[in-house]
Length: 181
Image (cartoon, rainbow, N blue to C red; front, top):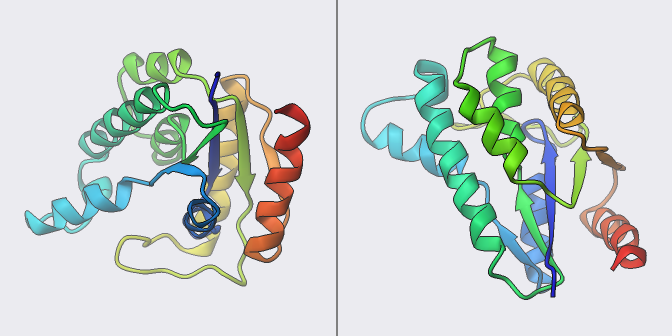
């Protein structure tokens, strides 16, 4: 069986993690977002916002973690594995910050391809900031544009998930994937 790798992407606060949680509840195998874990571990070491203080170190850890998730998904037997963000997100965020990074980052993104990429647009009605999500809604809009551009550069056509309830968003994903199964 060839497990399809499905990335759910979008700027901060668009509902990705909520969808991943709901997909898990429906029995799908999902790879969790790991940036919060990296941020919390850095905070335990006295670094308030590792991404802002050392974007390259943060991004190296994130890229490695997401690459490991991708490789782990290749051992799965389910029809689909969902990812809370994808590898090209790392490049998109660094480009957003205008922060340099090694060419190897792009190589990793090129070598590990998702079968489908769904994108959630910034949605002001559900947007909140917290200890790990420090971006304003306006910044979330900018990040969205960088994500769209970056994924297009890697040959992806992102599928827009419409605003709606968690259930309607999952229905949209399932209805989109079912004919291709």
